[in-house]
Amino acid sequence: MFGSHLSIAGGMYKAVLEAERLGFDTVQVFTKNQQQWRVPPLSEESRARWQNECRRLGFDQVVSHDSYLINLASPDPDLRKKSIELFTEELVRCHLLGIPYLVTHPGAHMGQRDDPACESEGCQRVAEALDLILGQYPDHRTIVCLEITAGQGSGLGYRLEHLSSIIKQNRHSDRLGVCLDTAHLFAAGYDFRGNIQYKHLLRQIDTTVGLERVRVWHLNDSQKPLGSRVDRHDHIGLGMIGEEGFKPMIRDKRWRDTPKILETPKLKHPDGRDWDSINLERLKSLIK
Ligand SMILES: [Zn+2]
Ligand SMILES: [Zn+2]
Image: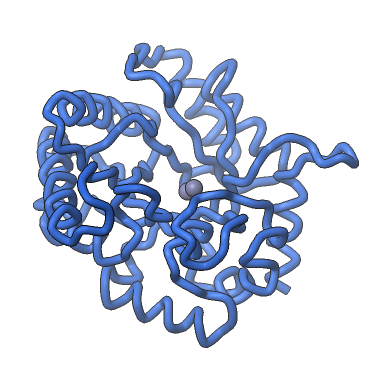
């Protein structure tokens, strides 16, 4: 199941229509302007149009990505408070819109880079914040998916162990999942190019978060080399992962019904085609 992160400019339902036009089976959206702390109310009309379009197309595995402003790992009390409030809004919006997955970056601990104590304290703060948020809404069914990150700066989540530590410390772990971004995995040092390397990654996933936790993939090639810890997305096949590098993962039937979302640069190819269509075509060609 392939999708793309698409714009909600002009109405949330516009992202669904654009996904249909481009030939995707699902979509990822921000449910609000992701650069603003302010959250405008979600109108009944906006919600109804979104749900109607999703229903018409059978899009039941849609994904929301939270705002990049949110940092649930922050040691700063003000930023933590604002982050918890905004993430709560994000979760409520997903619930109202019937979105089953909310992807979030674990956040940055803001201390010494790669310091194990700072990292474990950061993971603890994320787990506690999510406990607080999820505990308020026992009836919500949206799964919060912690995304693997490239590990820039003091960012957490560039090790699968960070994600499993957050999950293990959380009282609502049945409502937590994992999102694996291929560009982030690669930049973080996880190589999955070739069957042997890919199988090794599967074992690492299984012994940390567990394979069944992986609910969403982000499919991006990486402009930066393996282990560079720098997050730069590239078109499928044009980066350092390359078409061959994607094959074992794309051909693995266990992910057939898992949303696999493109977050590659949009724009148009010089030949006038949409890059999203070209990337989708490339991915489908790798399955054969
Ligand atoms: Zn991603
Ligand atoms: Zn990224």
